[in-house]
Each structure stands twice: as structure tokens, then as C-alpha cells.
Length: 485
Ligand SMILES: Cc1cc2nc3c(=O)[nH]c(=O)nc-3n(C[C@H](O)[C@H](O)[C@H](O)COP(=O)(O)OP(=O)(O)OC[C@H]3O[C@@H](n4cnc5c(N)ncnc54)[C@H](O)[C@@H]3O)c2cc1C
Image (tube, rainbow, N blue to C red; front, side, top):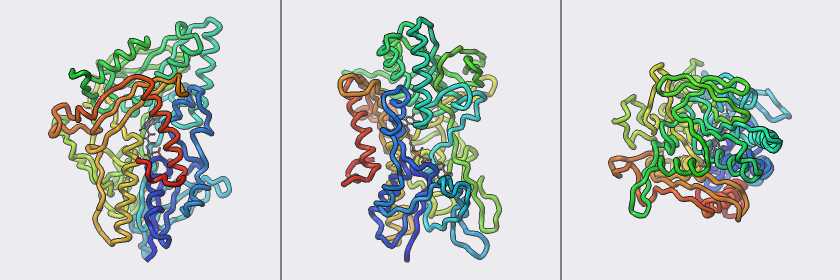
């Protein structure tokens, strides 16, 4: 019998899932992608767009021709409602979508599915902090469009410095519960590199503003590295990078609001402070896409399927427990929805069981600690894992989730690369395995052999190469599937 798999979201996890599904499923089965943007974006390279080293054309490409060539049905639309039990007598599951495709913008339709993958990534929640974001007082590098604006704003302050005006630049996160500190760290490096290249470094005060308890936390509770047989920490390593480059750090901060030229923030000790700026790139906190869910009778079951932050509950252990009782085994393996076995949540869209960094709250009750990152590689791996499970179900009739991949069994790299080109770049590269520490397996929570930090041109080459490799893969060029996630 013909089966239809609907993938919501054509980002790293959804696009990977869709390509693998189409590669592995016989043609009589349908693979459908629903995503609001006409273009795919290699988000990690937005950092380079944000300093004017790449343009949007280099980090995006239109999805429709790729999907046409591959035989994937594409709806340029937003998923808005899940109906996993269908409605009334029509008991086939479906998802309601609203088109963003300019030829039918605003129109709504129901798409039936046999399997659904929610790969909707993060909603950029600028609204959580008054005055935050490109529509208000700060810039962002989260989308290619935002990054172009960031680059323009950076050029403006550089021009002022060239005329002798001292400028304050702030890069970091715009809320106490943000994640993705690695991206803010990388952008800091790139901005610093550009200031030096423009000959204005001495005219700039550059500050990294973060919710991390200490430098090097990155939302993964920091890392222990072995260097020359000695143990060192990501804290010492990051501190020395900041010192060498003259970047100040303001830690343990929750941005309360941003006024033109002034950031108001609270710190873990409860103090309230301000920071003046001429240029500020602050990442927003993330929440899940605004999806609602209804049962067969039409009752709203959104709160059963999704966590309060909008991320989808999957096969994780969501029991609330203190930090000391957190276990690697709490993290999901199959990404199957807790309620519907034919629905999956992958990439940033799944609800993590808890943070990775130790949770901390100020005396005023404000949570100031990073949310757990879900970076590109794990997102791709989850997409592929779920695609393989669905393929087994369709082809072999299996009923369980046959493929598993936990973030407690996956590694990640954060390559903070500055400058482009093969001779002028440099990078601070960190690699960790696993992402979610496992203190039962490893005394420091992670494998010492596979967790390290490196500085130099080689890391930059890797990042530069990944840019081309991943765009090649996402374009589904010949043998794309040989490139690992
Ligand atoms: C500036 C920046 C730099 C980064 N650098 C790195 C890096 O160097 N290395 C790394 O590993 N990771 C990096 N990351 C993280 C990486 O980009 C994410 O981990 C990854 O994109 C997550 O994949 P995803 O598929 O979950 O979400 P996304 O890639 O964000 O994709 C989500 C998709 O869902 C679509 N969508 C949203 N709502 C709906 C809806 N209602 N219906 C249908 N579709 C919807 C979106 O339009 C998008 O296409 C960076 C992130 C940022 C912001």
C-alpha cells in the first residue's frame, strides 16, 4: 500500500530526512516536504555573511528544483495544526498547512500523512526580550537576511572608527535561557578579526555578553581537555583566547531589555546593570514552532504533545529531577512522539529532557543558564535515523523504532573560524564526545581521546571545506549520501 511521509521543515534535520527517505523508499511511496522558505540555508556560514565575507547567494539555494529532480513533493507553507487522529469519521491523520508560496499565500490545506516528521527547528523568540532583534535595537545572524543587516551595521561602526570615533561592540545572547553560545563565540572572533583587518581594533571596545556561568561552558557544562598529558578545561582555553584578543566578557547575564544604545541586564548575584553599545549582535532564545494539535473530537491536545516551550515530547525521560540525578540515559533515542508512534520530532524541534549545563537562578528567581544546544551534525543524524526507522516500517512492516541515535552517543564540533580564504583564516576548534556527558562511562563525563580544543589554520580549513561539502550534499549532487551528516 502506498504510504505518505510528510516532513515539516526543510532545515538541516528535515532536509536530510527527506533526501534519505526518497533515496530508500520505492517510488510508489510519497515524500512530502512542507517548509515556509523557498530557499535552503547553510546556517553555520551565516556567521561569514554577518561580517561581509560571504553573500546570501553563497549560503542559500532554491529548494524547489532539487525536490523536483529528486521526486519529492514540496509545499512552500507553514505547518500550523497536527491532527494525529484525523477528525470525526475521517480518521486519517493530517497536518493543516498555511501557504507562504507567493502564488497562494495565506491559503490553507490539509495534508494527510502516514508518518510525520516534525523538523521545524527553533522559533527565534526575540519577543521574549523587549527591544531585542532586527526589528528593534539589535542585529542577529540567525538567518541569512539578518546576517546581511548585521554586516551593514558592522560596516557603519567601522566607518565611524575610521573617522576617529571610539565604538562599543557587544556580541552574545539576549536572554538568560538562550542556547547556541558557540555561534555567538564564533561571531565574536569574526568581528574581532574584521576590526583588525580594517585597522580599527584600537578604537573598539568588544564585549562578549553571555548567560554562561563561566567562559567555555557553551551550554554543554564545559569540557575537560587533555593537552600534552595535562588536563585543562574549556574555561581556561576560552579565557586565554579572549585575553589574547582583548575581548571583555560579561558572564552570568540575563538581558532584560534593550533600549537604543543600552542593554539592561541582571546577573546571577541579583544585581541589575547596563551596558552601552553602538553595535550589538545578540542571539534570541529559541522556542518550538507555533504548532497546535487536536484529537479526533477536535479537543486541543497541544499540551500533551508539546512541552510548554513548544518543543515536541519524544522518547526522553521527562521526570523532573535535580541536576545530580541527571543521566545520559534521560536523552531520547528514537525521537518517536510520546503519544503517536507515527510522529517524530528531530533536530531542535524535539523537547530535551533537561539542560546539560547546571541550572542556576538569581536571588530574584530569574533563570540564568544556557539551554542545551542541538547542533548541525546531531540534527542531521536524527533526521537520518528517523528516516531509516520509517523506511523499515514501510518496507519491512516493523512496528518499533528500529534505529536509534542518542546525543549521549554523538559527538559535536564547534569551529569558531575567523576570516575566509585558505591563507588568512584561523580557527578555535573544539570537539567533544559525547555531547551529553556520561559520568557513568567517563570520569570527566566525556572521552578524553575525543574531546579536545585546537587553534590554528587547520580548523579554518575544515570549516571552509564543510561549507562546500554540506551545500553539495544538500543539493543532492551525485553520491551526496556518502558525505556523513
Ligand atoms: C548563527 C548560527 C551558527 C551556527 N553554527 C553552527 C555550527 O558551526 N555548527 C553546528 O553544528 N551548528 C551550528 N548552528 C546550529 C545549527 O544551525 C542547528 O543545529 C540546525 O540548523 C538545527 O537543525 P534543524 O533542522 O533542527 O532546524 P533548522 O535548520 O533551523 O530548520 C528548521 C526548518 O523548519 C522550518 N519551519 C519552521 N517552522 C515551520 C513550520 N511551522 N512548518 C514547517 N516548517 C517550519 C524552517 O523554515 C526551517 O526550514 C548554528 C546556528 C546559528 C543560528
